[in-house]
Each structure stands twice: as C-alpha cells, then as structure tokens.
Amino acid sequence: MPGGHPPVTHALLSLPLSLPLSLPALRPAAGEDPAAPAAPAPAVSLDDAAKQATDAAGWVEQNWSTWLSTGLRIALILVVALVLRMLVRRALTKLIDRMNRSAQAVEGSALGGLLVNTERRRQRSEAIGSVLRSVASFLILGTAGLMILGVFAIDLAPLLASAGVAGVAIGFGARNLVTDFLSGVFMILEDQYGVGDSIDAGVASGEVVEVGLRVTKLRGVDGEIWYVRNGEIKRIGNLSQGWATATVDVTVRPSEDLDRVSSVIGDVADEVAKAEPWNEQLWGPVETLGLTEVLLDSMTVRIAAKTMPGKALAVERELRWRIKRAFDAAGIRIVGGLPLAPDETPSADPSASVAPPSALASPTSPQSLATAPIPPGPNLTK
Image: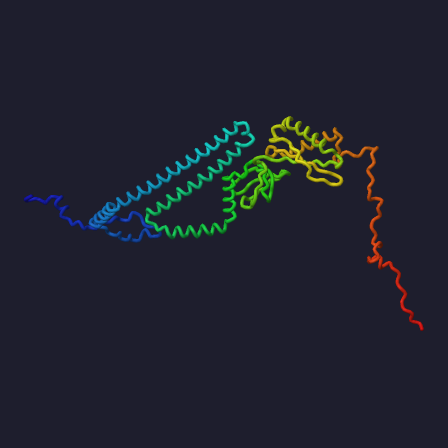
C-alpha cells in the first residue's frame, strides 16, 4: 500500500518457519533447587514433528492389514474352539441323560429294582460325564492355544520340548497319583463296583460308601471306614452283582436214615420258599446236594440255594434255624445237638478189651535187648 505500512499478515508470513518452539518449565523437578535456572528444553521444529507424524501414519497404514488379519484369525480360532467345546459338552450331557432315562425305564420292570440301582447308575454316569467333559475341554482349548501362538509366528518346538520334559518329570514324581487316577477311571467305565456294593478289594473289604477317581471308601463289618487308593487294588470280588449262593452243611449221626433226613430238609425248603420275605430273596429252589463227608461218628449233608445278591447270609441263618427245629421235632440227632436219652447207654468200644501192643513182644527190639540178663564173663582165676 503506497505511503503506508505493510500489512501485519504479510509480516507474519515473512517470518521463517524454523523458529524454535519451547515451553517454559512450569515447576521444578523433584530434588532440584527452585532458585536454580531451569535447563532449556530440547527444541522440536515443526518440520520434525510433521515428519514424525507422517512416518507414524505411514507405518500404521502399512501394517493395519496385518493387524486386522491376525486379530480376525485369533477371533475365529477362539469362536470355533468355544462353539466346539459347547457342542461337545452338550452332546455328552444328553448322552448322560439318556443313560439315566434307560436306567429308570429298567427300574420300572419286574426285576428292575433287583438288578439295577438307579442311584448307582446316576453317580456312575455323572462321573463318566465329568471326566469326558474335562478331557474334551482340555483338548479343545489346548489346541486353540497352540494355534493362537502359531498365529503370532512363535516357534512351538522349544515350548513343546519343554512341556514334554516337564510332563515326564511330573509323571515320575506323581506316578502313584496318575496310577490311582487311571485305575479309578477304568473302574468307573467298566462298572466294576458302585455305591452300596459289598466287595473284597484284597487290602480291605466291606460296603462301598463312595467311589472316587483316586480313592474308594469302604465301610467294614465293624463300622470302620477304609480309604483304599484305586492304584493299590489288584483284584476285586464283588459280592453284590448277579446272584449269590447260600450253602448250609448239616452234620448228623451216621446212624440216621438219609431218606428221612432228605425228606425233612425238603419240607423245610418248601416252607422257606413260600414264607415272606424269603420267597423274594430266593432266586431258585433249595436243593439237597448230597453227602459231602462221611466219618465214623458223623456225616455231613450239604444244602444250597441261589439267592439275591447280598442276601446269602440271611438265607443261610434262616435255613439253619428251621432245619434245627424240624430235626428236633422229627427226633433226628445233630452232632453236638440233642444229648443221649437217659435209658440209652453208649455202645462199648470193641477195641477197649484189646491190650495195646508191647515193645517187649519182639525179642529183637531194643527194649527186649535192654531187659535181657547180662551173660557171665570169662573165668580169670587159675
């Protein structure tokens, strides 16, 4: 503009852009003297700031596609793993429910209450389902974790080698625990025994109170609780599966009539088969198997019957009770039972009048030679 001052905007635009921009220190740093002069802050020009912003934007623009693809792959792996885990667990739950429904259907039949224990089946199926669900979750989530590490381009060989060495060390250190766990899993899968069964586990015997993956609890005959590790059980005798056998041995005098003894036992067997509650506990007729032992002063007749599992002892006690009463009424003497009548005298022993053999009867025995007179010696006088 002629005759005047140039505009202010032109003056500002004519200034160089490389002026340093600095901010004064608002407060002194910790440990510094407030009176000391503040150190000058590093100067950052507008060109440097613009260059750094441009580089950052270029780096983000260059790598955003890699980040997006990596994130999508990780999200896809997690979604697939979680969905697969949910489907597997739901399928296992439906399978367990179907097993329980089948057990309840059998329970409603005639012999369902005797052959199937619904509570035992339920506990067994729940234990199997818990083990299968845990194994499935571990496999699915473990595989998903390894795949995610692979997405980040992490070398899995050292990790797998370290895991293998750690697994071997833990296996050696906790081999008893692993043995107990595996034995418990197979016992449950094979249904070797369940809650309420009477078993003989070798190291202990009694009624099963609880079945675990590591320890089995047994209640002994005296009420004690046995904690038996599953890895220590080498053999199992289950007294509650299938059926049991009640066996009774009746010892009578050898002079008794066997036909009469068999007839009395048959009458007792018919009474027991018709009486309550023995008619439900007997799963077969009471049979007289015959003589098992014949001696000079006694003979033994064996009786057997197939019973409900766990009811053999009760049936044996009832048979002994009824057979003893029937024998007493029929006058059949059991060895150790009825005493002899007062007017009866025991038969004489035919060997009582025979003298025992003597060692002196043989002239060549050592006893006869010892009692023989000593012969006179030679005459030494002249």
